[in-house]
Image (cartoon, rainbow, N blue to C red):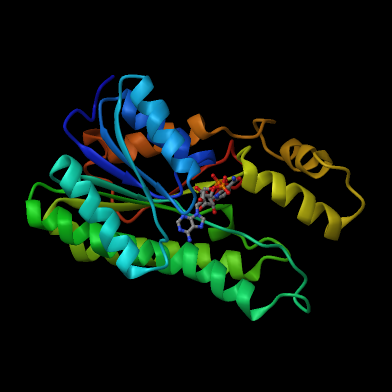
Length: 260
Ligand SMILES: NC(=O)c1ccc[n+]([C@@H]2O[C@H](COP(=O)([O-])OP(=O)(O)OC[C@H]3O[C@@H](n4cnc5c(N)ncnc54)[C@H](O)[C@@H]3O)[C@@H](O)[C@H]2O)c1
């Protein structure tokens, strides 16, 4: 399928993990990709897309910085003329007992996961409206937007905030042909989850690396962790014409881990 010929997709947090998998999937379906992250590794994702005959530019920036976010969307328009789809995927987590959690941890997680979504969506909506041909805003939430897990009150708050942003913006731009949706990955095998496995593992018992993840994966009805490709299938659907009448929704992609 090449559903996204002549469409430009901006995606943050695309240097690895879920974001890189989503970017590669859009590229295979013909989109122009603008892959962004706050680390140089993102350049290799664009290079890989080009080696595979896709179209991509890379941009190193910080989603918590309004000037940097504006420069990202400027770069997208300069390279490809417009923005059609914007995927707010950059995210961070820390895991600490409440007495050990610092104000800096709180502020950083809220800044990247929630304010970052706001700043990118704000910039993207302005560009999409200017072109007047509609578009898609897609935000990365988490299973923690449904059910706050232990030792991560800041992360749970930040991702529940993403759902609020999604619903509010969906109402505001509904008549501009722009849909706004979010998705909740469950346990997806990435660098973030490798950190989660070890950090939660230390606080919840004496787990060796990989053991806690194994235990949690046993609790998933499908009995397997998710992959970036699993997530990319949902995100490309939400960006497609088939999802034109879906807005303000938050959809789980987690093998049945959470059913509400
Ligand atoms: N892996 C999971 O199981 C899981 C589950 C639920 C939700 N999520 C969410 O999915 C998204 C991607 O997670 P992942 O597992 O691929 O994580 P990851 O740690 O592998 O990648 C995180 C990405 O975000 C980027 N990033 C971090 N801070 C940034 C900033 N200030 N500005 C710009 N980019 C920044 C990093 O450079 C990287 O590209 C995150 O929003 C995360 O919260 C992941």
